Length: 117
Image 1 (cartoon, rainbow, N blue to C red):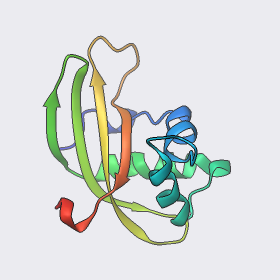
Image 2 (image 1 turned 60 degrees about the horizontal axis):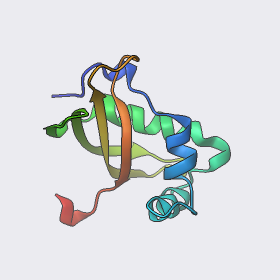
Image 3 (image 1 turned 45 degrees about the vertical axis):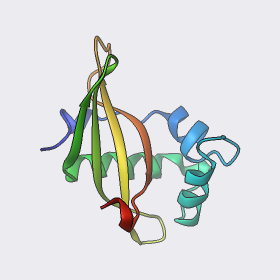
Image 4 (image 1 turned 90 degrees about the horizontal axis):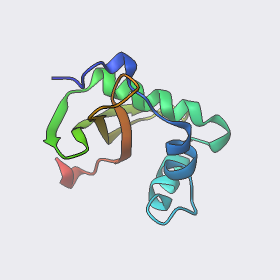
C-alpha cells in the first residue's frame, strides 16, 4: 500500500527550512545534522523535498494511524542524497480531516536505524 495520492504529496518549504534543515530547532537539530552530513543544504532545500516526495511515491506504507487530526501514514524507504548515497529514512505523512489542499502533507522525516526494523 502507498500513501493516498502520492503524486500530490506536499512538502512545505517551512517544514524543510524551519525544521529538517534547521540546526537551531530544539526538535529538528539532530535531523538537520544528519541531512547536512548527507549533502542536503538549506540553499537547495528543494533537493530534500523532492527526495522525500520520491520516497513516498516509491515506498510502502508500514503503519496507518487514525487521529482526531486525520490519518497518518508512516513510510520507510531509501532516499537519494546529493552525495550519491542511498539512505533509509522514515517519513510520516498526514491526510488531514477537512483539508483544503489535496494530497498528504509531510509531518517529519528522520534516519531509519537498524534497530527500527
